[in-house]
Image 1 (spheres, helix red, strand yellow):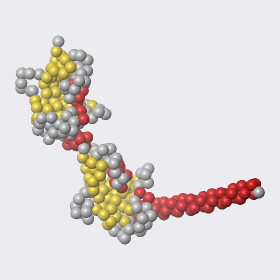
Image 2 (tube, helix red, strand yellow):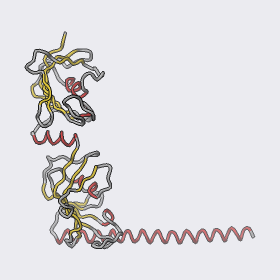
Image 3 (tube, helix red, strand yellow):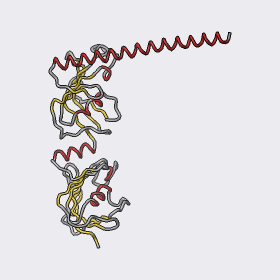
Image 4 (spheres, one colour):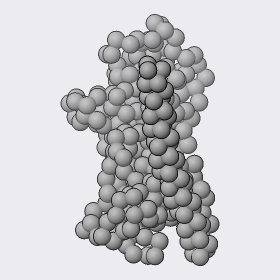
Length: 294
């Protein structure tokens, strides 16, 4: 009797597995069919509109319609504003900055599930692009009044801008056509203006420097140029008496060298600022390394 009961339970379990497998197979088959239908629709649309689109690893087809590779690409943490037109493949406009009362869509990269997170990595600032998006990356099986389920979409990016200290520094470098001598992972940018012929600043040694400090706007907030005094910087000093960005910049220099350094507030006066310097403000310093104090 026990044997018979176990056999019956086993048969019931097998039957449930078969039913579940059948359902999952059906769902998988439907998903595959939708993907294939989307792919056929997208390829037909690309051909009919003479687009020269590339398929990205995430399944989006895209074409850069205005190329400017000197522009910045967005990075994690950037606040991004984008002007766009989102439409069905038949041309019906579903959404755009114009329909949104000329307000660009805004999101924070890395903290958003916005569709644009999957599109903008293929563009630089200053570029425009056309994207054909499979339904699986759009609204999927959801149905809206003006959008049937499983519809691929077209998105035209008209412009986008990134806003952050890193973005502001990159834009300053680009707009002023600066060719950097070095760019470092901590955020420091370094431009050698005049070669030095003397020694680098060794740990424990003391440099005497002249400097001018500016904001990215060009406004000077401090300088000892034209004054009798010099600023002293001790090699290897991490006590914080000199801002980290300035300290590391001087340690990259040789005696006799002139250089420009740019660094974010994380290497300067942080989120709170100090005196004339507001919080979250990148700084520029032009430095002349005069001598090592004996």
